[in-house]
Image 1 (cartoon, helix red, strand yellow):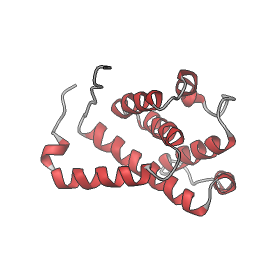
Image 2: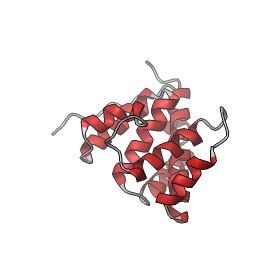
Image 3: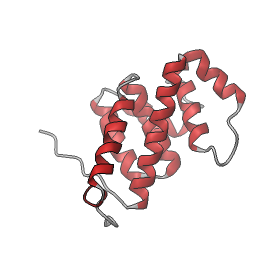
Length: 149
């Protein structure tokens, strides 16, 4: 796959600002949870670039292969905490918002496990990864991981 444009070269200031926002929202919740959310949204959006990148990041952060592999069936997999399940349900609902309204029970579960500030942080992180998915899929971006040292 060949990139359609170089996102970073074509819009360097916007790319820098987008990265800054991405980094800001990513620093507000536990890293492992955010990587699971990023992978899950990317699965829903069919973004191979972001799935590739965030599964590597999740492994480097200590996430298990089992939990990464089971994300596509997280509702049935017993290896996620209640807090993670609430975040994943919120991720699914926000990512698919055009297909269905967000059920009250999904929000209620989110509110049970996340403070108001954490809900905003998680929602922003989900919006950012959905934006990255659209940038990467639209411009056919591909992340090549660096060889392990």
